[in-house]
Image (cartoon, rainbow, N blue to C red):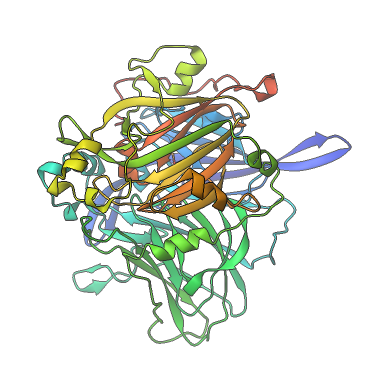
Length: 579
Ligand code: C2O
C-alpha cells in the first residue's frame, strides 16, 4: 500500500581475498487500526501498512534486515520474525515480555538482524496479546547463488493461510479460561478462513458471493513455488489444488528431499511454512480451486464450524466452473501424521555430527490442559505448569542487567510431576469429571525457564496428553532450528522409541506438529545465547500457558556472547496494555 517504504541499499563487504555482496533490506512498518469490510460488516483491525496480510519481506540469504516499526495503534506491539535464527541478536526476536517490552503507542523501534544460513520461506507476526491475527506476513529467502536443489521455479507465490475474526480476541481468550461455566464455544470461532487475506467465494452475505478471492494466473507448463505459511490462530490446515501434483521441497526455511504428498494434500500447522512446487500442467480449458480446510479433533472434543477458504488457479483459456479438489475429512489426523512423517532433510547438515553424539540435556514435556483455582479456571500447561509472562521487564533484560523480576522465575522441570497413561481417552471429556482426570489435571501458574549451557546438545520429547482435550500441539522454538528425529502414536517409551530416531537425514524445522494422542522427539544444539521462547503455536494454548523459555548461556568469547541491547529498545511501562 501507499505508505510502504522499501529501500534496498546495496552494501559492499570486503572479505579475505575478494568481495561479497550483501544487501540491506529496509522497511517501515506502520502499525495502525483500519476498518475492513468483509461479510457485510465493518471490522476494526490492527494491521501493518494498511494491509492484510502485511508486506512480504523478500531477502537473499546473507542480507541484513532493518525494519522501522512505527506504532500508531492504541496497543503495545512487538514483531517476531518467526524462524529467523537471530544469531547473537536475541534483542530483535520480538517475543513480548521474553526479549522486549512492547513498543508503546506513538513510539518507534527498529529491528535489525541478518538472515544467514537459511533459505526458503518464513513469516513474521506480532508477538504480544492476540494481535498476530491481523499483523503477519511472509518472509521469502532466496539463495545467494541463485541455484536451488531443484530446477529454478518460474515464480514465487506466497500463500498465507489465516482466519478472519470478528470477535474481540481478548474476550475470546477470557471466555476460554472460564470454559467450565459455559460449554458452548461455537460462537468463539473465526468468521472465516482466508487465503492471502481473502475470504473466498464460499462465504457470502446478502446472497451475493463476494468478489474477494485469491486468484493465481498461471502459464501452461511453468513451475510455481507455492510458499505456504499458516498464520491461523488455532487450526492446522489441509491444502490442495484440484488437478495438480504437489511436490514438497522445503519447510521452515530448510530444504527437504523432494517428495510427492500422498493424494497431493499437504498439511500445515500454525507456525509452519512449506515450499511446494506445482507444475501448471492441467488441461488449460479449466480453472481449478485451491482449498485450505481447517482440521479439528473428532468428538468428544467440542466442535467448531468448518473452516474452509478457497482460491483459484486460472489458465489463460479457462472457462466455466472451476474444478474442485477432493479434500480429506476435517477430523482426519492420519493424513497429517504421515505427511509430517514423510519429511527428510539432507545428511550434510553441519550440526548433525554433534546431534548424533552425546546429549547433555533431556526433557520430557507433557502438553495439555488443566485448571487452577479448584477447577474454575482453565489453563494450558507444560508438565502441569502454566507459563505466566513476567511483568514490568522482559526476561532477557532481567538477565542482562542481573535485575530481579516482580514475580520470581523458576526452573522448568525436566519431567512431568506424575507418570500416567498420557493418552488415555477417558481423560478427554472434562464434563464427566472422572476421578482420574480430577487427580491429574490440577496445574499452577509460574514463570518457568530452563538454563542451558552454551553449545549443549538438547533433546526434547513432546508428549501430547488427553487432559481435557486431545488436540495436537504445534510446538515452536525461537532462535534455533531443531532436528525432528521421530514421532509416534500413544505414549513415548524411551527404551523402545529411541531405536526409531532418524539420525541420518532428519528434517530441520522450527515448528513440530505433535500429533494429538502422540509424541515427537527433537534435538538441537544450543549455540545461540539468549532467552528463547518455546511454545505451542495455537494462539489460545500459548496465551493460556503452554510455553516456557530456554535461557541459553553465553559462550566463552566475546564473539559467542550476547551483545548489549540496542539503544532504542522500548522502555518497559507498566501502564501499557499487553495482556
Ligand atoms: Cu511464530 Cu513465538 O512464534
